[in-house]
Length: 257
Image (tube, rainbow, N blue to C red; front, side, top):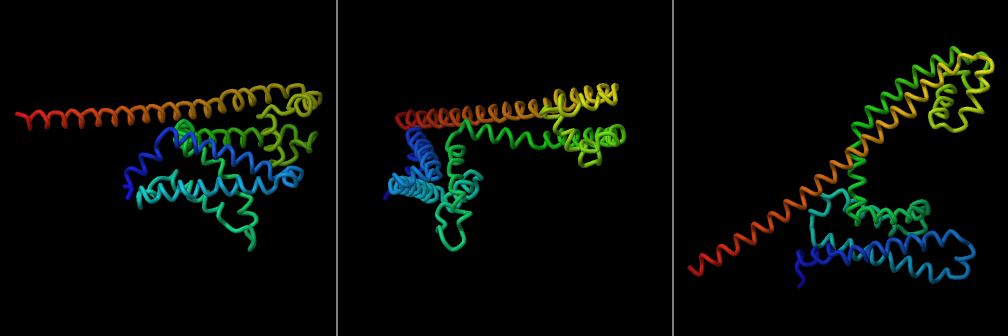
């Protein structure tokens, strides 16, 4: 009988990882083809067969990993993520579960869990969330202050943009994204209020070019920390293996006197 350790070693081989990535990509293509009525009419049987074959491979890989790890399988968030996605794919098409069946495309996300580089990106985003929360709070405070000021300054002449606090907040969000802010909003306002530039220019500089760059910097910093930790873990594993090998050699030498 194949040992659990041998199964895990097989699943962790680079060749197996590359094969799973190829299957995930193939399955993503077939799920996209299902949305075309023409392709489905011409090759519906083949598309369904490929989809079921990909699902069978996912189930087999998940079952093997579950057997190899035992209850330790559920201690990893990525394993739980894979388990939920494959379970959704196994839900029958009928019985009111059509919405869940439509979520089969989520299988594509498995490419994240089987690709270490993509996992590092997600880990970096997760590490950045606490810092990003502080930046988002800062943006909310700035936008709230700016919305109150703009409503009082421009609300009477431009109620469609600054008539209420909610409307102003949405307008400022559009300006912050630089989507049609000049010709649609700011220039018409400046025709009535020539001094309006003194309000909009600092707002754009603070929110779009300063605060949002803080978010980018936070994400980059967190991803670098995640990559550094991965490198340290790899180095520690290598060092442990070397020490174990040296200890084994030393025991053999002692045994020979």
